[in-house]
Amino acid sequence: MTKDDYVIICGDFGYWDDSGEQRYWRKWLTEKSFTLLWVDGNHENYDMLKRIPAVSWKGGKAQFITPSIIRLMRGQVYDIGGVRFFTFGGAASHDIDGGILEPDDPDFKRKKKELDRGWKPYRVNHVSWWKEEMPSREEYDEGLGNLAKAGRKVDFIVSHCAPAHVQDIVTDGLYKHDNLTLYLESQSQTVSFEKWFFGHYHDNRNVLDKYIMLYEQIIRIV
Image 1 (cartoon, rainbow, N blue to C red):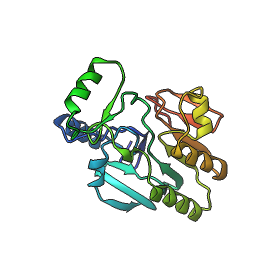
Image 2 (image 1 turned 120 degrees about the vertical axis):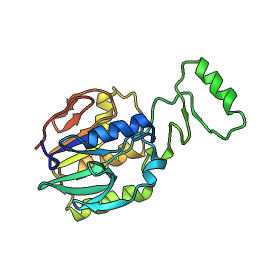
Image 3 (image 1 turned 60 degrees about the horizontal axis):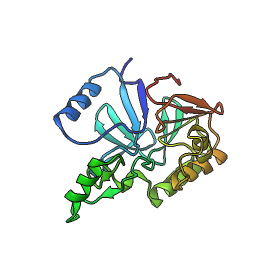
């Protein structure tokens, strides 16, 4: 493999903090003989991502974490080696039955202590959860505009969560529809594509032939 070969992660890359461990693994990945591309999931630090400038790359906007670790941004269409990709990261967190705690809440320590004693998972705003895990109206609209420019035809779609009807299948209806899964559902019905790759649901599975759910499995697509 060379730096002109690409490995794509379907969300939850884990761009989390600037700790020594994170810097070590980013350096480790950067030194590999490929370029790593990723769409965001619901386990990224969006405060950190906001600080990275978006640049033009392969026909769309991208963020370079390092020269060889590149975030493919929401609603973009890229031409990578003659193959056209539409990307749309993000997902709603479902493992937050205990709620979202605010660090500046005067009662924060007590609430956290109570939750730590229990079994309900929770998150802390701007520490382990960010509202930007779900797209903005502008990102939805940008995706529609870029798809229109592409004639609503691409080769592959890469997302973190799945269109609503696919999510229903892989979760047996356990996860509720939301604005993002419904947006992706609309694109699945109106955009021409060969395959759709997604993550989020912690399994590897082919769904209805065109949809590929990935977890730790690596497959070749080109």
